[in-house]
Amino acid sequence: MSSAPSLSKKLAAEVFGTFVFVVVGAGSAIGTASLLNPDAGAQLLIAALANGLGLAMAVSATMGISGGVLNPAVTLGLWVGKKLPSRDVVPYIVAELVGATAAGFALVVSFPSALGSHVQWGAPTLNGILSVWQGISIEALLTFVLVIAVYGTAVDSRAPRIGGLGIGLAVLAEVLVAGNLTGAAMNPARAFGPMVAGGFYPGYWYIYAVGPILGALIAGLAYRFAIENGPMSRVGDK
Image (cartoon, rainbow, N blue to C red; front, side, top):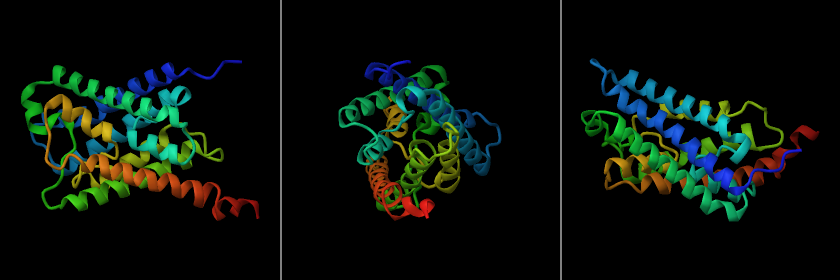
């Protein structure tokens, strides 16, 4: 019988998985800048597919070691739902930020600077028609849905065993919904890694921390008390 992975192995998996996800997700934004005739709809679809499928791949690859969390907001959402021990929270968040930042620097080194100057190295940006509070609300709502998908497709003991596919599909759908509004980051590491590497610090940067964390905490509590241990948990027993 194999023993449970050590914390160091879990953290290595979180660094690696977040690195892979951000390279694919942020890299898709940089890659579309090289298209000769970019179309806004096509760019949105490319971003949705890259972020959704990239996350599905990264989560599936690391799920057996670290749980495939790869997101500081999801880390906190799992913590309030009693699915992640308190001692692992800060190390997980640090590992995820390190992986995302390393991915950002890898993109800066690998891609032409002309592309980076156009898209801020894949960092999410806020549409000018939104207020900061609207941006926070959208990111919170999107992350709420994402964390519910994480619980319902990967964490709950009753969940279907489909690896990271359900989580990736949730991200794909949500990028289609709001990718043109906030960038649909739903992940502080996904937002801040490219920002740090590219030296891109918009005045509204904090929406990508406040919104996702708020949405994740509410989702974790909602799943714990309303679905897993609440009235909805007894529906199937009747």
